[in-house]
Length: 274
Image 1 (tube, rainbow, N blue to C red):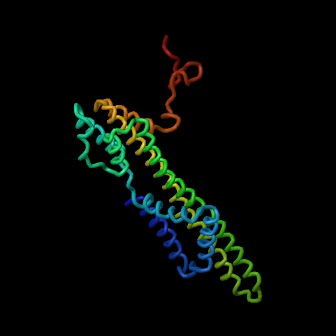
Image 2 (tube, rainbow, N blue to C red):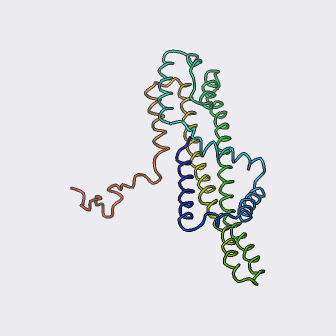
Image 3 (cartoon, one colour):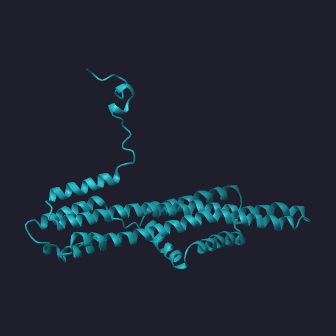
């Protein structure tokens, strides 16, 4: 269970709920027609953009990725490959037949390796499987981002519908205030659904996609290293270098060098010696 997603969702709803409860009656903020306009309209617009099968699959992917974090720790994967490299040192890959892989992709790579697949074919098969898995996350991200974009728009549409209905019944001045409040509720619903649920889940799916791509790329390199019978320390260095490259921030660490400074000065402003 990914506690960050659950805590964030509960905390967001709690903050808004407490703000409403302390300022007015909670029942004032409940409007079923407005909620139907926002949810139904956003879903309808999303179904126009994407196939039905992709939309239904996106909700399954969202639950698994946003609430159930199954991404393997890459450092533990490196340790597992080094351990296997030691176990096969001076032996054949058949020594790994009884090894229990931490996940299905890892196990599939080992089976292909033990079965004697050529390196290029092994990489191709695993890469195809990795790309298919990543596409599921990408489609889910796009669908939830589309929902997040549509919800506020249909909230505004619901507000306009409410305003038209209010202006059509101006005979009773006392009903204008309550009718205006109901009209504005759809805008509130649209903003909350977009910014508290749909867009954060889309961002979480994007993060999971990147994590899975890094993890599976690491497993592919590890399996190929086992197939080449790499020395355990060399394999550890290769995989750790792979991790460092994947985890390095874009643009480096922000520290300049002597050649980055004007007039050849060091970062502290002093001219170089000599």
